[in-house]
Length: 157
Image 1 (cartoon, rainbow, N blue to C red):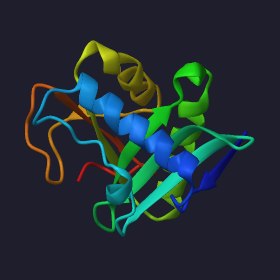
Image 2: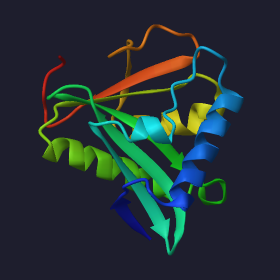
Image 3: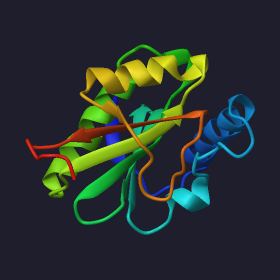
Image 4: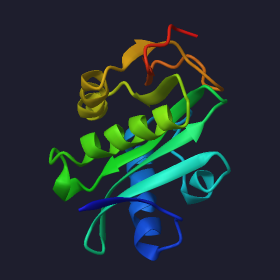
């Protein structure tokens, strides 16, 4: 397996991300859906990594720069047949490492409040993310859980 910065041009990546958006739409109520589609992930300020096992895409994750000090974890997904195999941990570790290298002092994320998202919330907690209020353009939503992590010993912003 290898983690690579992805230019999002391959059909296998498009299919993987399309599955992600379809799944998020199926499990998240209208008005609470924040998953970025392929076009959204191509916007400036977003870096996407994919995990490949040979030619197959088995995971993805992204870092969106909110400003010069704050980033957002986006598009975290592991292929269904590879869940709980360590792929999400590898991706999150890479995203955190890249955020530190970019000089960010905080990472935040939005995930779902439903039971479906419990494994994701547990993963983020293991990596030191704690619950917080909405950030960026997000608004308070009972279907969302907002989490943040301070990087390199910085105090809260």
